[in-house]
Image (cartoon, rainbow, N blue to C red; front, side, top):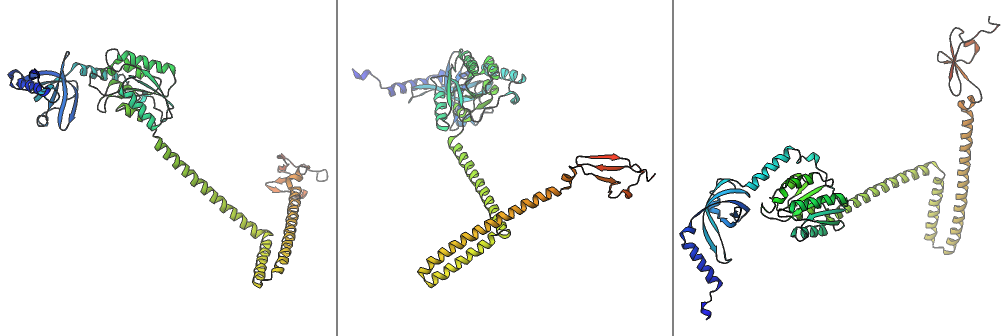
Length: 423
């Protein structure tokens, strides 16, 4: 009975034989739109689709090199291919041997039209975009709560800078209802006002999968956000309208997390560098202060009685050395006591001398203040000038010319008047 059961390999071999021998499948001409295009090992892999269905296709390197245009997602192409079975995987696909450009697909054309419209309105201008903070403390993430993008963002933030608080605003990131939920999450984040920056993210996908981010209403909502926005949608080569209107675009969700956080290791290095710089500057300050102290000490040594004290101390040191050389233990104690007493008396004497000099300084300072002409003039004395010359005698005054009388707080012009004797 078991002989009637085929193995999986046998079935796939049979299907491959049928495909290879069917003349209708050995050469087919198909028109479709490229989706999810990727290049690997010199070969092109993509899906060819229309409004209702899609099929996988491959263009081997030998055919790729003969193409006279660069295929892209959303592009409509005309291909000649054979339908083959991939026996190991049990799938079938198109083996493209010729491909021509037929034009851009409707989805991509709509993308280009909206891009041009919003660009003319100035929504892409850098001047109107909000600055993304370098080290935000609170971050909002708008994405699917079950998608890989959220986990990539959380893992990256936790690894780089786990000191921030992340708020999730869940939304759909694919399908017809996605723009509405994305707008709702964005508006809610703005109303809450809890965060410093908003990440709008989605993992990779085909151009059609990402088309919800090409919605005009969503684009205007992002442009109107009062909180800076960073988009991390798809892969590095994927661009959406949301990327153009956001404050900054990251190539992936992980890239968005990197863009809004600091690397804690790099931050630690910066702190160490700043600490070392402060230590160096503080050391330089101490060195300068120490040199200044040495200079002041030397100046005091040269101009003060301490020079004599130092000389006496040097003499004491010399005497001690001589005593040690003679090895007279008993006399050493006596000399130490003697030297200590001399040191105390000398110190007291010079302290008294310094106190006397300070009194003398204060005495002369007061005397100078007493003799200060300005202080004398406060008592009512004045100075008389004529033609800029100080007048000390009545005979030196020219009655025909004005004189200037200088008081303590100002000057007064006057005209000399003859006495009765002079008249």
